[in-house]
Amino acid sequence: DTGVSQNPRHKITKRGQNVTFRCDPISEHNRLYWYRQTLGQGPEFLTYFQNEAQLEKSRLLSDRFSAERPKGSFSTLEIQRTEQGDSAMYLCASSPSTPQETQYFGPGTRLLVL
Amino acid sequence: AQKVTQAQTEISVVEKEDVTLDCVYETRDTTYYLFWYKQPPSGELVFLIRRNSFDEQNEISGRYSWNFQKSTSSFNFTITASQVVDSAVYFCALSEAANYGQNFVFGPGTRLSVLP
Image (tube, rainbow over all chains, first blue to last red; front, side, top):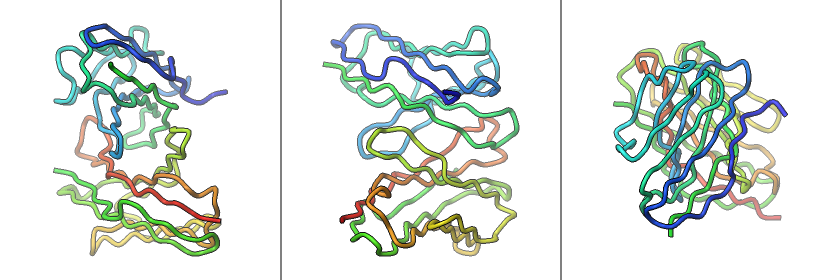
């Protein structure tokens, strides 16, 4: 399977706990994106990487959120001290380095904060 | 600022009917890209089409067709002879060339239900 993969697919946690999600992009793609999608809404941009460099972060990405892509391959998104409002689907996408190239999405990680 | 509007929240049709999903966008950029994605119940966003602002030619792919009109800032999607497997949420998205972040702005989506 050469598509974007995300783990875990589902995560249930208690308020105040930390969670970490992983994304493995399509192997030849330099760019990696994180989005958040809440029920009934379209995905909202969180952050993006060109190789290992994090080039942009949305205002939605509070101080409790941190993303890394240490070797320019897989990426992790960590949420510290989770809140109920963090419950959402977290989507990862990747694309080649050509500007405005199509982004290919993974299956997402559905987070529920109790 | 870029914005995408999908005014139809939900649409229900009977199998074999044609259905059009509307997308209206706002941008101040002269160079931009428009996309449609399908999100079936499994949750994964599936790419359908990419169109740049300089190419207003309509496109047909099997039962799918897209009508891009810059004059009305619309990029509508038509499914001909709909099938139950077309049931999904469809998202229209916009990316501006001037947006160095390369991020997409998605519309709120239209949930299509095709009934047998």
